[in-house]
Length: 547
Length: 91
Image (cartoon, rainbow over all chains, first blue to last red):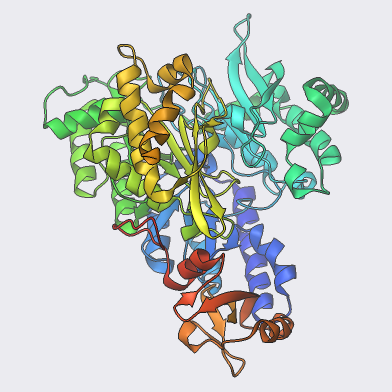
């Protein structure tokens, strides 16, 4: 994994001292809230319903064991004993005091972490495949490229005050696990006819109130041109993005307005001025960054275990992913216990994961866009002790990728922007599906819940999406069907009127029962849905409500 | 019936305005105001410095938060509803 150099260390230390001074001036009355708010947001500090919230950056979702231990320490020392892993591969603390935040940032800096650019209209944490460097279907490890983008975009003076926030994703595998079609810019690593690696560039994807799938901007970008091309793309957006209207300020609206060809022409013109300048990446620098991301090698590879308790074998079936290296596997640590809060982990659980990362995981653990954790490299013979330890800590739920592996935003229980609750709905859905055995029976299904149209729960790209809305003080939930996150990305369709909260879990159970009736043999839920259309499931959603 | 609420500067906790111009975390201690009184008091609270961040007016009835934002304000008052018993119909 990447290690800070003196520039990174200095930059983070200086920022902590700057923010400490800003907090002291706020507490002492020398800064108003209006003056202070943009400063705290630039350091990842929000003011939510009950308290301040600190969002900590986890670059492309990768952590070492010592970093995970510090995240546990922050939860135990400054919060209420837990943290919340997010869909953007970060972690949020829901209860810190403003006056404790400089100390939290100092603790983070000790292990090369910070909260810079986790809010504000800047380039946010880069999303990457959580199985990068491990997945068997990978063409190229996306992490070195995510790290190069991280270094380029950190405190970039030209792109610190963009029209709106800007999110970049990099994916290097056949399956898109980074969501390149729903990011402002998505980079898919591809190989051209000459066998050279490069990037397919996508632009203008995003969710929120105006969901858009990204459009292809460039078929093949040579690696050494990555930063000059991104600079050109950002520069055109920075110049023409709608600063006059918050709801029209994302790049997707600019691409709508100019058309993909019009936007591409502007980018190409801008790029023509800078592509052969100082931003061209030297081969030596690419190699240097790559050298931080070595792949583990082992001797005497063992096969996957075939014996063991039924619960262990069920976990192997759902939570293990194939690895590039014979004898290794990637293990998904589900943060979706039945009835639990999606993405939450206690300090004790984080410490346990840190221990397993150090002992069995080649000192790497990842955060996924599905709000789970991954040990990307585990020897097959170590899977049983890993599972046993996870089970003791309540972290061995065998549901990765199943319908009970629900993504949910914090919703009205925490978030200042939310209109409706998300977490209790997710909890009730997972309990309902578990009680009937539906999650296991239905196989691969994604359910994602957002508590408002900002769509932090990614409901637009769920097979079954749930959007909370407020109608005169009451919570209602719109169901969408047919969304998808990956290489087959799609925006789900609203199927009808909103449901009362109590009606959502049984309605989703009816959808899955209908699927089990409709499906051809071994057909996935999303394939049945695409074959039959969402109307086929509408009756299942609403039939019992009319009775 | 109305009162003023805000978040506390030091830690963000939910607070309410009392009759003597202080702030409390207890809704029972909050000053009950008419709509006109609340509208007059809000700019005073906004102009003060030191304790309250982002004061605003909320509706109350005898039982607690009321009006269209009753659920949001009840969650602010009582905390998240994300326990193990999921009463979805009411906060």
